[in-house]
Image (cartoon, rainbow, N blue to C red):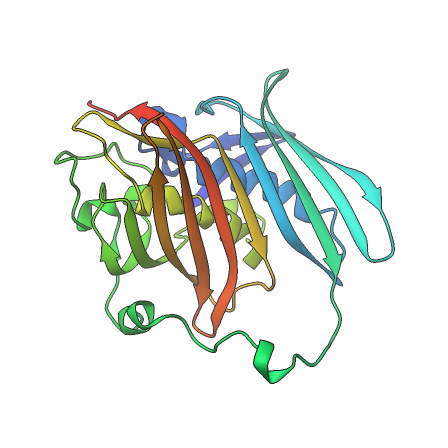
Length: 270
């Protein structure tokens, strides 16, 4: 099966599948966040759920050998606080913090229960045959992206018009994150959540879009199955700052939310 990272000792080697839509020599934000999530999850016991993951990407992550390290900040009976750092050689280029909480079986009052199933647009798109990659959907930029993770992900679009500032689709990760290691549901959703800004990408003109410098993911449960529903919107201001927000779904209903802090960025022109 395809992988995003090969492993060589303590180093993680990005494959071509990791490449970013912003340029062929950097890796997709989802791949970076997925690797941070992978390191964090290894420190989380089975009875806990990572309910919040915040990743800060200090700079574009190059397609070069990387290292990742996780550390326990606080350990309690019902709570763990963790951090992870992403390195290129000795330079820290990304960091994540995570909160893991102990789960418990409870009964939710009927009036407070989350509605079953995804919203109508995602429900209708569920049965459609998938298409592959962002080149298969409308794109207001009018030109192709360099190949990478974004051109390989299977999609079941409900409403995707890249550049409009809104996007709703099912998406599936087409590869394992790390060679030789099964990709968990948590790592899968952390990797795919970064697509929220891409699906709700807002183009200001033919050469300017918005790139996210961070991601905050909140989960109240893990997705069941490989497909993740993303219903995303970007809200921008004349000061050049935008926030992309999305609700995340599986076939049974809402699983969490994601937000991303965005600033303007020149689009890739070849």
